[in-house]
Image (cartoon, rainbow, N blue to C red; front, top):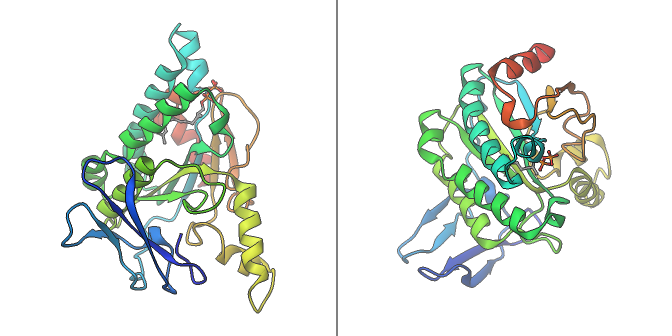
Length: 279
Ligand code: FPP
């Protein structure tokens, strides 16, 4: 959203309305929207995004970065004679369990592939169900705060021409980011409407505009979340041996842990086996 070259959006929502009734654009040379914590102002139901430069964030003390491609929810459900949506529901529950385990294991950064740019092609009821699960996950603010976990999002900027994230999901993500912004422990980054190739195209385009032109550094500085560290271990569940357009730049040097277990069965033991590759 906002960037050194682009305006910040200030969005106001009518009480009870699903969509914003007014979007003001403030010309501000400042940091990305999601790095600034939205805060309530004197107008009821209005989120104001600060135009101040963000305060430097404390890096989590632990530095290990695990990234997960959470595949196999549908097959997990199919084997039990359940609808695919039940597999996604169980996948979300499992993610919530694993966040707790990851914190116990002193993982600094956990990034999960929650919804890809390709996932929009799935049947609408399934897409709606998955979007609801994202709302549920980012609504677990009590648990996340108890665990000192900070939420981030990575994906196509909500104002980019190709972006498709509905407003209610944008709001839920933004709220979770704000409500966990002061946490100093593990950083949970949810990739939503994310595709690695789109991220790289945008980063290279932006890098080209800089004085230094296209270099490893300038590309890195223009990724969706420049502060996301390199991935140490990339997990892919459910027996698929592919990286599926996930964190292509950040995972360039990652160890890869493939497992036959579908995502809902990726448990503490599996997580430890993946960690062993990285440590
Ligand atoms: C793959 O299962 C998983 C996804 C499409 C991503 C959605 C992930 C979840 C709902 C888990 C919870 C996570 C969040 C962030 C809410 P699949 O449908 O491709 O499984 P299949 O390959 O067996 O069909």
